[in-house]
Amino acid sequence: GIGSVIGLGVCTLTFFFGTSLSYIFTDINSYAIESGIYLKGFALEAMLTCILFSYMGYFSGQGKTIFVMLQGIAQTFIVRLPMSYIMSIQPNPNLALIALAGPAATLFGILINVIYYFIDGKFAGEEMFNAGYPITGFSFYWDTTCGSKFCIDDLLVKKVSYDDVLSQYERDS
Image 1: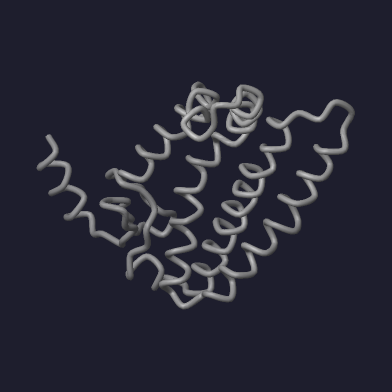
Image 2: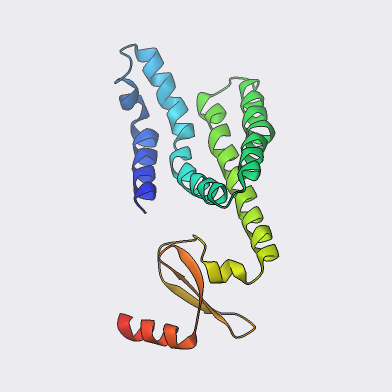
C-alpha cells in the first residue's frame, strides 16, 4: 500500500539522486559523492524493508517475538556483517558493493519469514485460512485440489464459498 509507494519513491530518489540528497547534509564534495555511491547500493533496502517489517509486525502481533528477534540476529550475523566485511577487503573496495549487504540481509530476512509463515501455517492447519492472514492488496481467487476456494482480498487470505466467488465476480463485472 502506502508504505510500498513511499519505499519505491525513496528507492528511486536514493538510487538516481543519492549524491544530490547528500548535499543536504554536507557541502564537502568528496563526502557527498561517496555517500551517493553508498546510497546507490543501499537503495533497494527502502523497498525490501516494507516487506520485511510487515512480516515482523505480523509475527510480533501473533506473539512470535522470539522468532522475530532470532531472524533479526540471524540476518545480521549470517549475511549483513560477513558480506560487508568480505566486500570491504576486496581490492579497490566500492561503497556501493559494501552497501549491498543491507538489501541482501533484508532479502534473507524476508526468505526466513516466508518459510516460517508457511511452516507456522502448516502446523496451524485450516485455521490459517479461516482466520485471515495478511498477504496482498488485490482480489484473486483460486481452487485447491480438495475443492475449497480461497480468496486473497483486502490484505487477507480467507476461505470463501463458491457463492461468494460468484457474487464477487458479478459485482466486478
